[in-house]
Image (cartoon, rainbow, N blue to C red; front, side, top):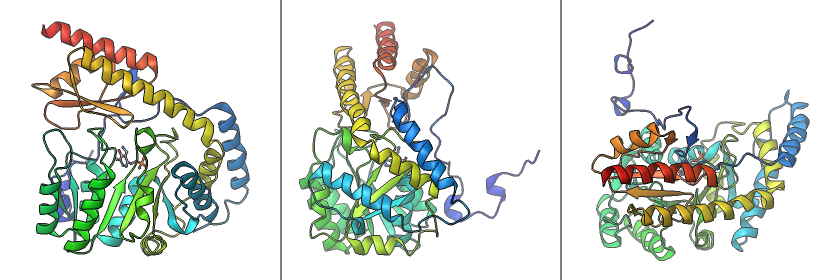
Length: 369
Ligand code: PMP
């Protein structure tokens, strides 16, 4: 065994002392910690994936379609159908998860000597991918209720003039959505300061009470909407994320993408899943109802809950959230401690999984009283 540690290696200075993304992957009966969809893909879709992948396998001696044109066409159709806002394949780009989409955006619009800003607490990978691409990270403010304080946000943008501004809606880990008016004000502030790119991360938008911000793309070439098939489509294992933006943005990210980054197997699987959009999205309604039930039951049990438009719920408040996380785990339920002091996050699972979680937190409340 070697006892060389990371810091003994000549790693880049900005990576020294940092931890990798590390949601625990523990083998416990009820896993409600990574905002996955709890429902396995329906069997007819599994069959269709098998067929499509078999076809793709026959051509694996060749590189895949570098521009993923068929897949981008189908994704554009999905966006147009669900938002009512016309999007074409030239507006859409796809990569291995929205994490890779974000990485490509930061490689294109961030990088050494540039900065990105997000309003924290928010999705931790925005900051981590920024560092990984040599982009300076600026933590913008949020109010005590976890909404974006517009005056403070505008001031931060004007002062720091970031090159990329992230807005996550619905936000992870807090769950609340950002109103379109807020995004517009942030966009204007970002344009006045630099101009910079505004990336709206809509990973959870299908679970929202409100609509996608896609129509805001009209006439705003510095706006990007990022999406994923990991949540609503129940396909986290597929690794397929995508963006919608002005065609110039799609051209620009192609300057940094690795050639043939999206394998033929990935493209075939995603295309099969998109043929079954209607079936997959049926689970979304069920999960939204379960999310609303979690909110109501947690409140009835005496917990505080942040308003949620996502497939997860932030609940508190705890003196020591990590100790509470451990007590819930001891009862066989894995939730997430995102490091937000006083709060934990639970993903909406199946009704049975949610019952197990609710039983565990009710027990904890009783113990406290
Ligand atoms: N954005 C947000 C806000 C997320 O919570 C996640 C996953 N947890 C992602 C992006 C990344 O998702 P993926 O890479 O699976 O598309």
